Image (tube, rainbow, N blue to C red; front, side, top):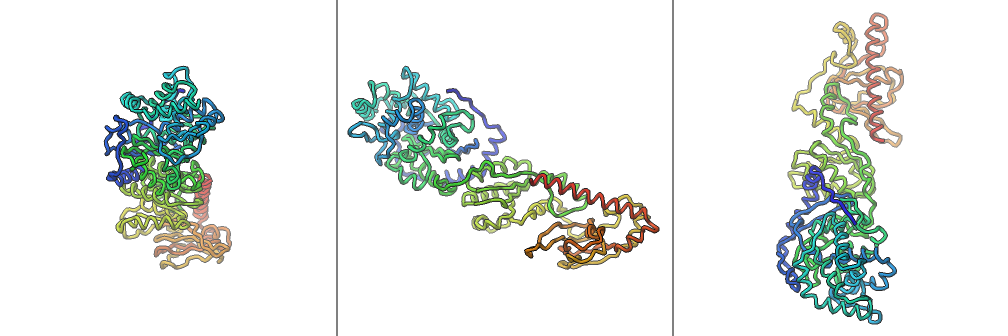
Length: 621
């Protein structure tokens, strides 16, 4: 079996280091670093040399994202964690039927070094106890022990995505002190479970337990099992997919020995521990977790490792019986502000300014179920983009479910972006009050304003307004010759059309146009802000557009000589110029050229708005 190492690109690796998930893992390590319970294994002399303070945590997803903190690259021997992987190799070499004849799959509730042989057949109860693991090692194909250990090393290296090596000192220490395992080996030979002299098989077993790995390696090995046997970093297959379920099954029922029942009840992930202090846990289809901390409890499991896995499972709802949908398509669409603008229409100058900085706004339309795995995809994408943009809008309109782990990750992302003077905003979050409540509960009093939730495109409008904010307090009136409606008119022509205009002020909240009334005037907004709204059949009011100074409204019904299709209300105290339709029609007698130019400009405005609508429809579809 061959494999290749895939290095994470520097930019992606930097993003991973800066991820909110990394912040969480750092906090988790700090939380349990002071836990001093447990003892280092000393029945193998070399293991007794480990430092009780060593502590690493790593997570690897099936998407190929690896997160690691602490002593995650510190190497230690794999020990019993090798058992499920070698069992998988035995399955590949012999098939399920032959393996099941020699190794059972029933949990024992006993310690890892228990005999647990069937009194009649001598069959070991399962492959996770030493008796079953020794039998599995004996079923690995190879003409010599050297070839067998080389195959095991290649297999474990394929899982880890890098060449692994044997710790000779630990191997010799294991071999010199492995008297109980030798007794088990000879009992297996007595029942003909091992069909040859057990000495070589025992040495093979001692060597497989002495392979050096790191906490990061364990996480990737777990992620490989989670990914149906394909290493998510190298894309190399480590085990045939049809045997992955068998390996995970025995890890789930027997991997933590006499703690297996409580483990699967609390943590809910197939797992395997080793007496060197490692634990690997697997969430099928999602991720692998690796933890390293040498102090062990009375069952031989890492004390800190159990606490870490339990906490991660609780915080992110990773119990395997908490059924969730796959999340690779959770991001339905992603685009920036150059592809779509808010319903707040602006004058030409503001449009140019927005276009220059449009890419600093990123919008993500999310769909499906939001849990740890799916939200991690979103968080990773945003973190990768955080050097290019300042505003990140997450649209939850199409989300089906949202759990506590999603809230936690979004909260960590909110803080991470805020530290960089960047903003995370949400739209259509009202359907998920749990998110807002979580944010408000976790944010400090001075930071409450960082939680920003909007309806529909108001978040995009907020970002645009922040970009355009010049700090000016006094509103500036738009001069008549600045309206796009009058582009191309000479000064004399402006005077003519200006003489036809009537000026009127409006208070905030006042209705300028009522839906359904006849159209008799065209309006030019010189100052303030107005919104165009429509009342739907169910009585709900929907905003169609908001206008800034320099824009025209009421033109469609004015041209069609029809009833108003929408209402216009004043958002910010305003004044407008009004052009009566009768006055405009009368210009055909003495000022037909002016009328033609105005109508041409109206056509251009219609065309621009239509192109904008077509572009946005394409993006949204």
